[in-house]
Image 1 (spheres, rainbow, N blue to C red):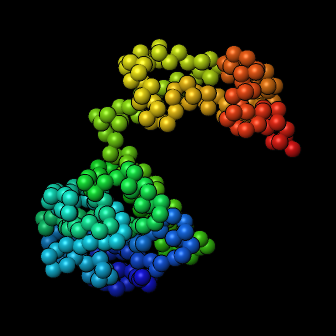
Image 2: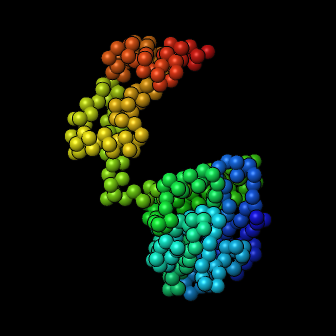
Image 3: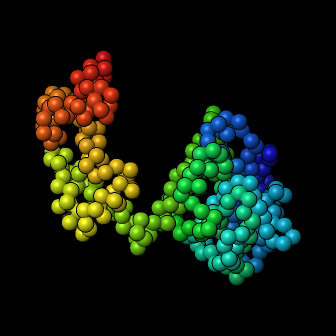
Length: 308
């Protein structure tokens, strides 16, 4: 792999330090076992009519004579200013604008560059790992490599945090760096859920339903009435809720109540009967049975264990 490698140090003719920094990391066995591994990260500003890519990158990261490049890792390239173009094995040449991110996939040839007239500012991270493979397969696709970022400021701050930790000398640094990647991808996923998308509409519906459940823990929510308030049929509501959470609405509400029950028992010092009544369970027996099924212990057993 690569030794530590700073573009700033190798190419002082590049733009000021505030805008340009990158580092390529050697392989770390503990980081590999973590499931996520940051391979490299950086930022740079490319002024209009400038050479691209800039000098100083390892040879494996340069475009070939045909203007293409194929990597063995994932990358996020976020354009914070300016515009340019991108094309890949599955994406015809298209315009990329500020506020958009490019997702690069292993084994997929690609090419991108800033527009001559505008240049651009970019942040990038390269990553791989067992968990990275799983998340990328589950939530992203090389068929749609351009992501609109809904939280651009937050993503930029997150990239800056990665670059900050790259410069630190601390124990478990590789794990700290690797653990930034799931949140970066969550920002990209958030941006993909536009207000007009079906997923976003379902997500908003479920958020409102959860809020209603949390605000009325002392009762059992009338789910059919709730679906009417939300403007959908009950079957549609139930389908969307289970798709978003993995639980049917009533089962999810019961889990909320059972989690709350632990606080009432331990911190508020409610009795088992008082807890069952406060959370709208019809009988103490039904509450105790549901509690044991969910936590593996009766309320009394759980409380004795956590009072010690």
